Length: 85
Image 1 (cartoon, helix red, strand yellow):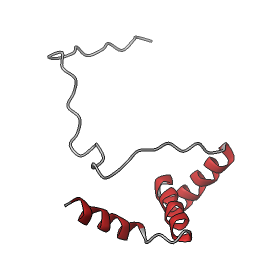
Image 2 (tube, rainbow, N blue to C red):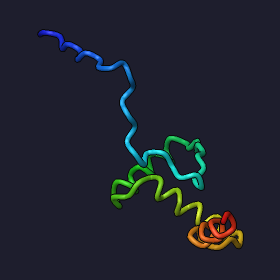
Image 3 (cartoon, rainbow, N blue to C red):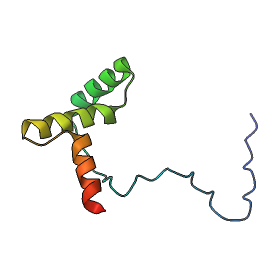
Image 4 (cartoon, helix red, strand yellow):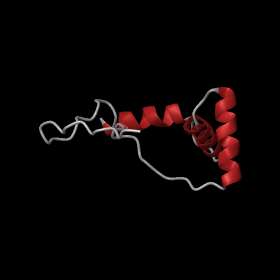
């Protein structure tokens, strides 16, 4: 079987990143280390409910904060945005 040939690099510059790919400044990145069984369970739930694992994790964050007396995430976000103005 013949090998595919690479297309020539044009201009030598990197391709432009699509607009809107970077998170807004009020979003912070963090990593979560999960046991494999927990990850697989989340993956299955996300698939079954046609949602993203991120959505399930945010649901958990909301519940954890609510348990400790914090307002809903939407309320926290609105308060934070008013504070920054």
